[in-house]
Length: 260
Length: 260
Image (cartoon, rainbow over all chains, first blue to last red; front, side, top):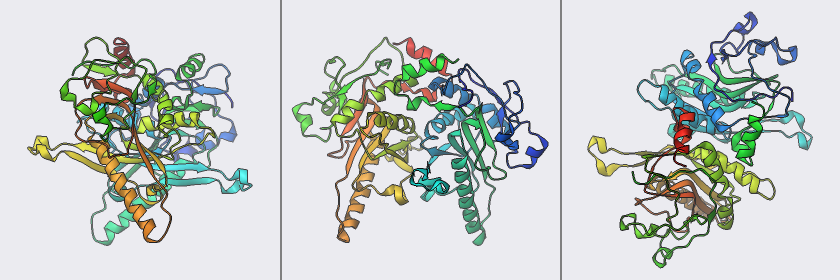
């Protein structure tokens, strides 16, 4: 489990500082916490593309990281600046990945509205994705992602929009890779349809926002040109216990406070 | 704004006790808080169908009711018993109304899983609805609801399922009326399609869950046979400030605590 991490105060997020190799990678636009102290280089197992994004809050050994609702709210609110610098503070649509992205997307919508010049409000559209594994059935290589809900009708019109995919955590990155790849395919299809009838094809911008990014080996990269915004980077890939999964919210908060 | 109400402790919910007139109405299955003291009869303006569901927590005069995340979590967790008695503790699908229903649905899914005998987990499907009004444009009678997202593909298969529509608040009831009516129409269409090809048509069960129900005149009734489950009834139709809309979560909690 490595070193658990505790969210207790809002974290400011800032510009990215990547090494030369990273500048060429699809991780180019990964945004990270800037107000936290620089940590030593990560072991090689984390992959070079993640070597420059270590920035954590640490506490005494414990197997789980209990996040309170308020800390998560503050962490998302603290991401407004980095979203603004990345040009994603006024997205047209928040594409929430269900179920993990539902709560962060709803909070983020309010945060963005507060930060908006004209009180504008991003729409929320939901895509349902389920990460599954057939390992128990002896098919370890067939793990993957499946859709439980997708966009249709008017909600599927993405061309010309500024779109921000929202999830709670970037863990193995499988779900985010699937979501962004499939959305880009939908966008390309819509662009082709417009071009085929001589219609103008306005540019579409796609980004990703997560509350937490675990600094661990990923199973894929985000597509080139898709920036990722992170409220808090976590080393040691802790087991995050989100408050919405807490059997007893008071006990949950007590466990979190004990590690603050 | 009437009397504001403050959520600070989990509320147990219990069986309904309706008057004779109500027993004949489509409000028959409205579930309410049973552990709170009975309040005096409501003024006539609230409508007879609501006369038996007054049960509130009150505090000193203030224009707004600030609910904390933890109080809402506890309130939803406290609804498990009444959902069990109503036969909706193990729904197949939570139909979250976006944006308001996203957070309660995600919390409720965990609560239901905790209460499940086999650890089973309800799926979440999202329908996007927007209550709009054209009053500003001089068309006061054309206010209504419009879809921003709906079910499609595999997610639209509802027949034979136990379905629980989830929203944050039952205010004017317009959104809930629209959602349940449209879902019943979809179900009827799917049933007819099955029957047309000689397939069996298993029964489908539809219910509604909200965190708060404002005891105020409603613009419609839920369809007959659709039970409503409420975590907390509120008299005086207070202006509820949900934590996800708080510009400053610490100030929000301070305002809520001042009215506890």
